[in-house]
Structure formats: structure tokens, C-alpha cells
Image (cartoon, rainbow, N blue to C red; front, side, top):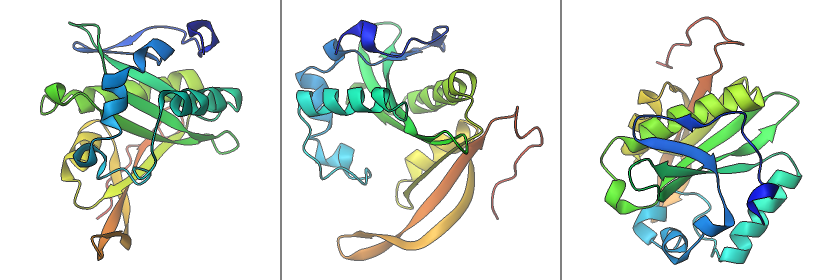
Length: 194
């Protein structure tokens, strides 16, 4: 995959500390691949049992772009210009204009700084402005409170809960459902579930 094969955004998407851009093949180095081998980092990812290689990740990214359903963006630290994580937009359902949005701050040196909130906000903007998404949705383990806080602080609301959806070490764990609504399509403020 060459940089020219990646989706081109109409503008740069940046916050004070972060930049979101298309993921490049050169971003996928040994440090990047190590994120997906880190059991503690992957414990809340439902597809974390997969083994990723550089080739499998590149293939998956190419397939997502070719099908116009999945796009992966690099989360770049503005100061160092290093890729510190990813945002995956997709799979996109073009008929309903909905999509999942998954954030991963893979470089542990950047944990605990509120960067996931900034990255999610940038991801929301890209989804709404570049792709015309009406609604973003996702879900997380009830035990992943840091993820829930990051998403809700980035403008998402809790929509519901699936009781005992996951099995973690033989014990049922709820799945919390979250969503973010494009104000172009939802001009009224959506209230969190109670």
C-alpha cells in the first residue's frame, strides 16, 4: 500500500496535541505491531484474539478502503510527529449512514493524558464532515470505565446495556452501548439513557 492509495481527507484534522491522518504503511513498524501483542492493552478489544502481522494489517486496511466501509487513521502526537495510536471508522453502513468508531492509544507513554478524548472528538468530526455519518455507535465492556469516560467526555451518550453480553474469565460482563449523533441530522440534544 502506498500513501497515494489511501483516502485523502479534504483538510487536516488536528487538536492542540494531536493530528489525525490516514494510516500509512510506514507507520506499521515493530513498535506499532507490539500494541496488538500486548495482552493488557488488548484485554478490552473483542477481536483481540487475532494475531496481526504487518501484511495482515495492510491487507485489512486495503480491503476496507476498496470496499469503502472501513478506514483507519493514525493518531499522531503533534510534538514528536509519532504515530501513537489508531482510530478505525467502520464498518460503515452507507444505507443508514451509521458506523462504529474505535480508538486505540497504543503507545503507553501517552496513556493518562486525556488524548483518547481528543482523538475521539477528531474522529467524530471526520466521520460527520468527510463521510456524512448520521450516527456513530459502539460498545465496551462494563469494566472498561476509562473507555466509557473517554467516549462520554468526547460527546457520546450511553444508549443502553446488553446484560451479560461478554464472558470474561467465565463471568458474564455487560456491554455498554454508546453513540454520538451528527447535529446536522439530530439538531436536538440527545440525552443519555437512564
